Image (cartoon, rainbow, N blue to C red; front, side, top):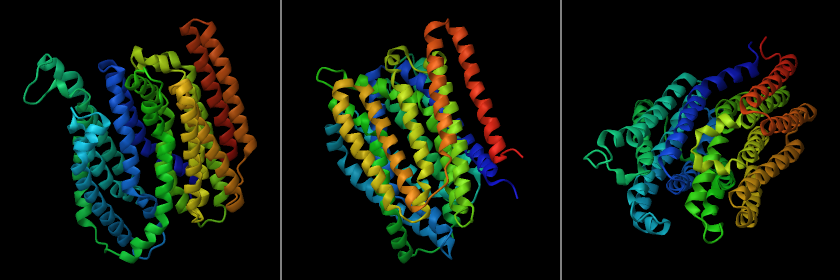
Length: 486
């Protein structure tokens, strides 16, 4: 039998083809946006996508994780998919009806009365993406990463092409004049319209799967799934507070006289740089969640989870070092007006690493059925986020928002470890993990000194060597310990 961690790594790599490559394509759109639009215009994009992240969690209400859980327990797996999918369909249609009715008031409240079409398009994006949640989860559960990857890449590829067309090519073709198919006054709205078209295309691709579904609607099963999922909904909403609320609060907490939307745009653009680590964490989660559930009944699963954590932390440290020590190259991905905010990048990278570790630790309450603890943890994190943002943003601006994010994720990471060791003890090797953390700090300090005191080409070459040295050290350590590549 193949090594289970090696199998997880291979599936993570395949999911990474869709998520990592796809997110990198979106990442490559960042210079397009930040060179084409001023920070205050880009701030509109940052704000609206922040709201959609909350709605995405609310409209899926934990059904994705509940689907994975009950597919491995229920005697009729087809009923699990059908019941969850129909529930999402009904709730999504209700949301669309209410949201469309409220658009005039929402546009006035948010300051988008001149562009209510932005909100119409966002309602469509959220609804279509919600309907695709269960089909994508089914592909993961059935271990069809290649199909998953093709659909994800198709969605992202179409979105990227449409962005390029509307933002770069159409203005050149029309010389900035309005035509029947292009209106320069829409501006950043073409980012939203491109997303909507791509989401609609993906939804159409899933129609054959919906038509082939043979399961039955099961109200009793739905009740059980909702009982399992509602704490995950609370945890998800609290997670969105932790992950994205800082960008909303900047609009309301910055001192009077600040160019609020410009500050929001700068922070959002610099946040994009830290997305490199987020990409890895997301692709890892696509493979890890069903992987952890599939090994839940094995007697040595806790040692497996501990070993997986070591590899995960090593990769996170390597990504953080590459991003921060090669910053003169990385910073070119955003326009010059946005680079004043680069100080937040190391803080946000460390924050995202803490969040990734928390995702690994959270398996204890998902496997033990104590999902309410997930709500407790993220709720505590949400309190930390709200309090520290309220205190720090008026004093430090978006730098305060970054520090609040780090404090939040570090808090829930530590609490999850402590509670997990009480209810579902996993023999994590803290010494090994601490070694990686100390090496990261030492190499970061050394690399920062090199960047400040040597010519850029020389500094980049030396810092690249530091990153490779860490990678070699971690590879040898984990190869010997886990026999990943035997």
